[in-house]
Amino acid sequence: MQIAFVASECVPFVKTGGLADVVGALPPEIAKLGHDVTVYLPLYAGVRPHLEGEWKYVIRSITIPFQYYNRFVGIVDGGRRNGVQYYFVDCPEMFDRQGLYTTRTGDYPDNAERFALFCRAVLEATKQLGVPQVFHVHDWQTGLLPVYLRTLYYFDPMLQSAGTVLTIHNAGYQGWFPPVTTERLLFPWDVFTMDKVEQFDSFNFLKGGLVFSDMLTTVSRKYAEEIQTPEFGHDLDGVLLKRASDLRGILNGVDYAHWDPATDGNLAAHYGPEKLDGKAACRADLLHAFGLEGIQDTTPVIGIVSRFASQKGFDMVAQIAGQLLERDVAVVALGTGEPFYEAFFRDWAYRHKDRVAAQIRYDDALAHKVEAGADMFLMPSRYEPCGLNQIYSLKYGAVPVVRATGGLDDTIEEWNAKTGTGTGFKFAGYAPEALLAAIDRALKAFRDKKGWRKLMRNGMARNYSWEQPAKEYVEVYEEVARRRS
Ligand code: ADP
Image 1 (cartoon, rainbow, N blue to C red):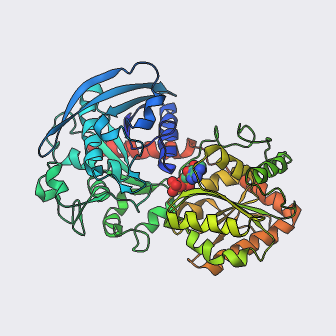
Image 2: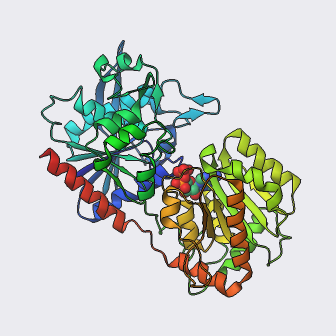
Image 3: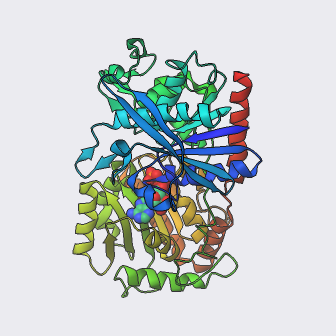
């Protein structure tokens, strides 16, 4: 089959979150199964260093009309890597910026125009470079592609049989814009109704994608169920419920080429389930990196690597911060994000220098060190579509303590000391006491060295590679192609 991935981020070119990991890893895996895969990305400032030598434009100029003017985009050949062809949509006035979606002071005011232009440019580009059987789009940034395809491009003979799949990586970000966006993007006003793109008087990119795509997927089975409820649907539960028969939950894989303590180049020592010794050296290295050299071997180290967003549940951590330090634990946190949480972690570390340390920045190498050096890994998310860090944690023997939601619930099994089964600790409800109780269960288990090693090994033996999810995606593509033929 011919599949075109259309996404706003992709490892190794540009990343703000888990979406980039998925768009980096899934296309090569689909290509390995014998399919013809292309990835389209915007040419941001951050992508430029990745393009070697002189750029080759495969298309010099495509006209993208807006209400009062036209913009012109080029398509740059990003070359083939791992069996996948990459193309970049070049429009410097839209994408040659440091941020992807926001600056420190808020969202770019022209995001609707930027990502509408991106979607439309990809549709136009494929007419010259090859129309795929399925466009696989991701999150709100590319939610408009299926809308264009089934409205303004409805009668295009080249695009008529192309199908669409939209993957929801996070339903909390939807791309809300004022109603006048309809005119600015040259849509007829009849798309601005509540059965199409309108949502509480906003033009909603994600909703448009949910309504107009042939099939929908999201990144875990549990999250697929959750988003059909008012608690997790972010007001789109009604639309998702209507489309329930077209919605699949496919758990993300992880890239073990980058996340395996047996080969990870960022670590002080290597280790694996058969030989755990190296983890002690990694722990010492981590404590050194965070200035916590005084921590005793018997004191468990809790690691955190996260975007600091309210989604991630750190308000609960703030509420138990005092009680947690009544226990024998140390905490290392790496993250950036909302000022409230950055301030909380900074302040907590400042007041307890000997046991809590925080680094407020994005640092991939340090994220690896945290996974390898921590004894436990904390993810108390309010909601978590899939979550990658808890899966990395399993592999690194950093026992996850998680809230039972979305992918966290799908990937972590509660430890049972009697049977020796399970991979971590999880709690239900959104209550600080429940979080503290789960940490207490973990601390108790940590004191039984033999049991703890078994628990670590259980997690390390789990396999969340991309092989299986890639096959499930191909089934979805085949279903879409069948419906469109
Ligand atoms: P989300 O996509 O909601 O941010 P995920 O757990 O799916 O959450 O993915 C987060 C990814 O971003 C992981 O690969 C994680 O290691 C990485 N990450 C998040 N914050 C940081 C940070 N401050 N430094 C390094 N890596 C980070």
